[in-house]
Length: 430
Image: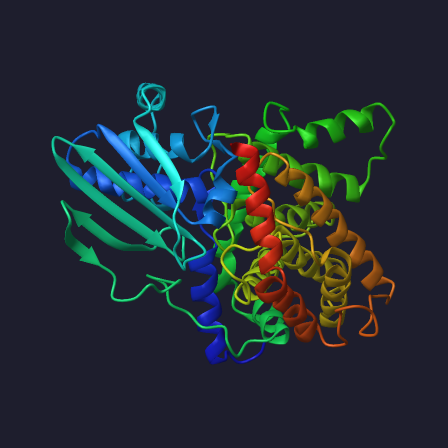
């Protein structure tokens, strides 16, 4: 076992901060949390809600089902957040919603008492809720991270203001000097007692996958694949099982199932993508809990490591980068070689670079399916000592350089793509 390095403590802080339970798509949930906190400060039910969000948060909140409501969009999230949200609930702010509170929220929408608009702010991730009642108002602003409250105002006076708008408020960590070798060494060598908490990701996301296999949610892709196997149109095998189980969890999450996902980097789908393929392969191999914990830690920490180089929200579908984590975890389970892990990630960069994020919706499960399949395909190539090489496209010989090239595209070149996507989506909504 290697001796711990200063990075190991940072890795543990990073994973504990970024891999947490989340109920529902995290963009509408961020607005629901702002509304819940505002309601707590207002001290009474609101008569009117005025919500403002960044364009990227609008993109990811327009078409996703809010858990427990059967409705899509940011307006219902703000309404039920204000009426029944738990202000201390974080990403599970809507966990305790009752049918009566949902009905009250829908009544507010019917009475046109909730407005949601895009506001021009420098923050890529921004949600703001202002609640009005009895001549008083409370305004709560969240920025840069889904639960990072930066301002609370009542009747125009500041009750609380963050000293800074840190994206890791409450859990500061630094991965600036980390490389994939460090991630691999930590996940495979750290004491089990320090990393076994990651097994909760398997528990939560397995339950979500079981729920999605019922076929009641979203595009029910997982259940559809299962039917096609029974009809002989799709072969039963490990690839099919990976796609089916991973996609089913996304079906359930995007379709409003009342179960939390273990998220990664602020996204339930990223957490699902980093978890289920690894779990399926571990089950296939009859791996014990230690093997599963190490593979899951390698997957989730790789996803966090890559996402730390990306904007919080961008035109790049981050399920693809989370699935690079899954590729790392699966490769280690099947081969236990660091080089195979790196080869698989490089092949995924060559395969999925440029997959766009066009907002959170049921169709996210399609991207989850595509990314999970790419991850396993890249692992199989690595097992055969094959990869997309550094002579091809944006892929480099070095895995860290390949990751940096991909993230540079998302951080710079794809900014115009993001603007065009948002413009198209906003025009469709009019």
